[in-house]
Image (cartoon, rainbow, N blue to C red; front, side, top):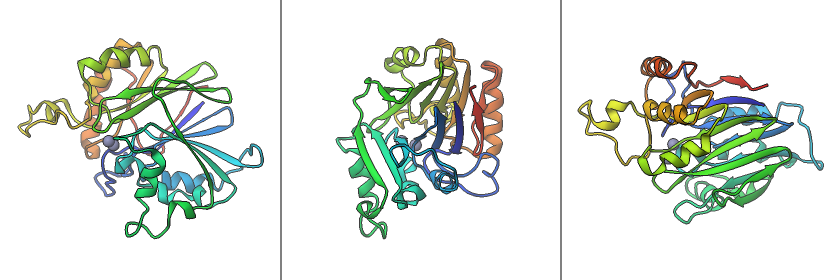
Length: 279
Ligand SMILES: [Zn+2]
Ligand SMILES: [Zn+2]
């Protein structure tokens, strides 16, 4: 199983010299296992992934090039790259798209909505790739060949879904847009138990979140801190924590990574292009 990061920023793309080390694109993670390509979220990072995918020698299934796309939720920073995802413009691709309802809105409606006139020149229905939309009931298992996908409900405005992929006795969890609280703690510890790699939302510093920095705090804004991530990963006996959905410039992320490593050795802050091999 291989994981590659294509977008690690939270809330908005932030290109520029102060963000070039970790990259400026919003959420997108690729996972390859058992000759299947799974994508978590289509933030602006999915554009570069799409350009890369169409250059690959693809293993076709049933005469189609199949991709599996899981959305955590439909805030802009998780869907805004979708209209620029090159495989959607190629008829030989088939996208199996999964998400739960968010504020009663299904994923197809959300993707269609952001491409409606006057926001975008091309309609979702005019994209030539075949798209199969699947509504996830949180907690039910999804089987893709030999890959098992589990889901968990996260604490975020309009909701977010965390995922865990299990393949060849290895596991990776993608937990973003989640605000730590006592109510969700045990649920997440149980969900993440003994997971090899956990990708986790660490948008704020603990000082920002609490308001200790004098900013007024960020409680109720739907994101966590590296300390929350460490607490959960330690309790769940996780092998490695990978911080994502960064909300700061590179120099600050460097500091956050060091602080996290002191408390949970082996942790890293994700950057665009980071590849992790779980063989
Ligand atoms: Zn987000
Ligand atoms: Zn969000």
